[in-house]
Image (cartoon, rainbow, N blue to C red; front, side):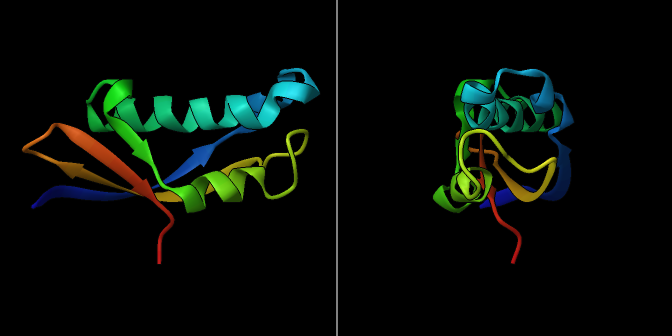
Length: 87
């Protein structure tokens, strides 16, 4: 079962410093890095749900949101984290 559930507001402001043609890709990497750091797992063990990805890409590659709220669920058995949109 899930060991730990947290809701995070992830700032994505540093995406604005990246070239416009790579901003949404970089935002997804920032979400993965932030969750891995705060849940104490490696970045390979972070699974991002399709709805989170769609929320980042909703306005296209050049205009990702400046922050996003996600729910992270850590599974103890596999040492993995699932990132979802909060309900």
